[in-house]
Amino acid sequence: MLSSLASNAILSKARAMYGKRLTKENYRELLNCKSVGEVAGYLKSRTAYNKVLAGINENEVHRGQLEGKLRQKLFEDYASLCRYELSVGEHFADYLLEHSEIEQILHSLMYLGAGNPEEYLFSLPAFLNRHTRIDLYALAHVKTYDDLLNALSHTPYRKLIEPFRPIPGIPMNYTGIENALYTYLYKSAFAIIDQYTRGEAARQLREMFQVYIDLINVSRIVRLKAFYQEGPDFIRSTLLPFGTIHPHLLDEMLDAEPEDVLNILAKAPIGKRCQKIAHTYIDQVPDRMKYLTCRHDIRFSTHPSVVMLSYIFLAQIEIQDIINIVEGIRYQLAPEEIQKLLTVADFS
Image (cartoon, rainbow, N blue to C red):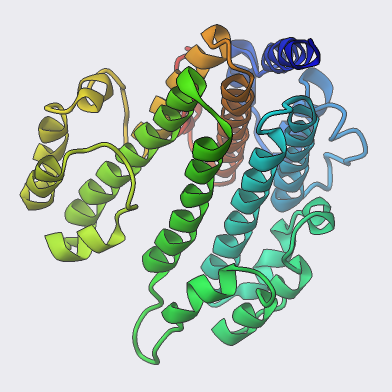
């Protein structure tokens, strides 16, 4: 009885939270904002982000501060939902924290690789420092790769990225580091699914992750071929070791021209669904498929763990779209050009 009540509670709560998502009108009005401050002011006064932004001064807000506040709301949503989900909530909360930690490591690496590691301080999510195993303020002061390794002491991430210590004169292998971290993350996700879920719930959760990983791998193949002219062996080494694409189809894609990769993917079940997804850039396909899958599951799934993760993934996508709008405004792109960068593109 208690389990049934908890299940009903999370189904209702997640769907109610989803009901407060940005509307088509909200997106259109955000696209017409002219500054970071305007975006912050609009979100504070007209959307469900009002509580987390209540104390912010939109006339002085920095892009990194706004992003930190948005991610704080997302983290609070994690905590709220995971408390209700008795079967796997606690375990997925750990997975979601790991996801946030990996994002911060990669942000720090990007700044380090660009030669201005101190910039990380402006995007540091201070609220996360209370929960993470990483000393984020140490990340904000790294000046070398060894500093980064030291900041990750007593975490599993140090061992994962230590083999990628840069060699003088050779660019840092950012793709290899990213691949190692996300392989670790998705192993955690699948281990949770295998250990704590059964039946249709397990099937839906696996599909949610596998379809996304399949399309991440496909987009990586296309990008590395089209923009970097990399060969099959190198590209294969960058792919996440999960997913459902048959090895012979993968071989075909690795040997094909970039423009033929999606046609080969169409031979697989996931490829037929993928062909229906409009996109401007190949990297948009994984998130747009995730968006469509989660939007369906949050409405129709009867499994609390599926509905919970669907909401969280949809909230992540919404926040990334807001960040993309802010970036587009900073670079003075026209609203119609910014809209092309968004995952939630069907609001015109």
